[in-house]
Length: 112
Image 1 (tube, rainbow, N blue to C red):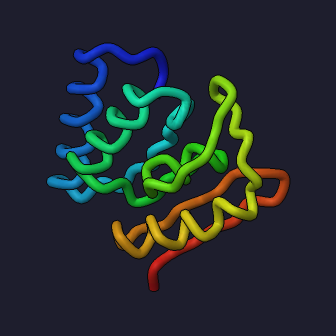
Image 2: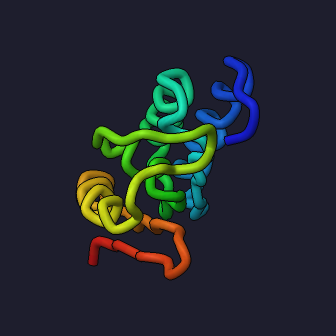
């Protein structure tokens, strides 16, 4: 997601919407989500604009959009990656997409 400003968020929302309209697959990596309410809200707005085909993130990057309580330290997750797998399953089911919890060994959750 990078350094956020309202213009960046609006641009990412437009890009997500356009990708969905044109059926262009895309991956969203919500870096730093959970570190602040602003970043979490921005990620949720982007996801809502056009559901990504894949969401890939560390534990907090997956748990925050799934609305699961956790803690972070900057862009690093302090959550147990195994706890994020349940969040990934919840998020994948809700969005009907694939979710990757990126750790030493990635966990991929997808809706068939």
